[in-house]
Image (cartoon, rainbow, N blue to C red; front, top):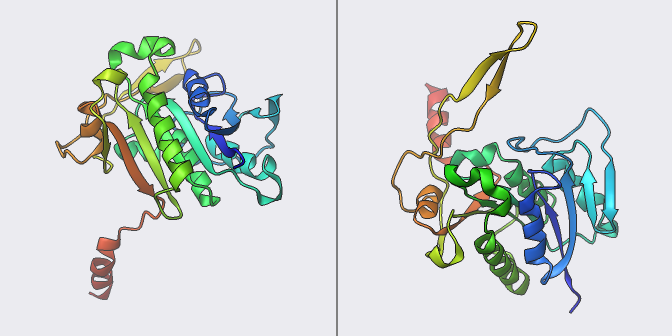
Length: 263
C-alpha cells in the first residue's frame, strides 16, 4: 500500500514547538506536508484573508510558511496548491496547540479553525491541544509532549487503518491533560463544556498620552461538574476527544421560534 498523506498546520506559528512534536509523531505513519502561519495567530478563529495577497515561503518540498496567513488560509491554499489534480490528503491535523481549546473557546480557536476548513473542503480533520497549567506556561519549550505525541499517533493510526469515525463536516477536537504519560488515566469521549469568562484586560497609555487596551488570558474555569464535558475529563487527567460539527443550528428552538413568530 502507498504511504498515506497528511497535511499539518497550526495557529502558534511556523516555529512553534508543538508543531515540531506533531510532525515527529506522525512521520512514521504518513507522508507529511506542513503549511503554517509565519507568526502566532492564536484566537484568530475561522478567519480567511481576502484583502491582500498571500505568499508561501518554502523551506523544503514539504514544508511551507504562509506569510501573514491564518490557519484557515494555510489549509485552504495548502489543499488546493500542494495536492494537484484533486488528490487530497487522507487527513489534516492542526496543532499541537500550546494551551487548551475546550468549551466555547473552540469558536475563538485558530487551531480548531484549521480543522474546520479541512472538513469544509472534504478532508477529515483533527485539532489537538496541550493543556498547560499556570505554573508551566513559562517552560512550554521544554514541556514533555510524550502524552500528546502518543495520543495523536494512536488516534491517527486508527483512522488510517479503519477510516474516519465521523460524517462530513465534522471533526475531532482533542485536548491533552497537563500530566505525563504515566499519570494519564486514558481517553474519554466528551462534549464541549461551559467556559466561564471574565473581563481580563489592561488599559495603558503610550508616550504621547494615547490610550490603548490589551486583552489578557482568562483563567481556565468552567461552570459545572458534568463528568461528560471536556473540562472535567482533562481535569481528571483523561485525554478528551470531542466530536464537533460545523452545523451550529439550534434545532431544539426551531419549533419554539415558529410558534413565537405566529403569535
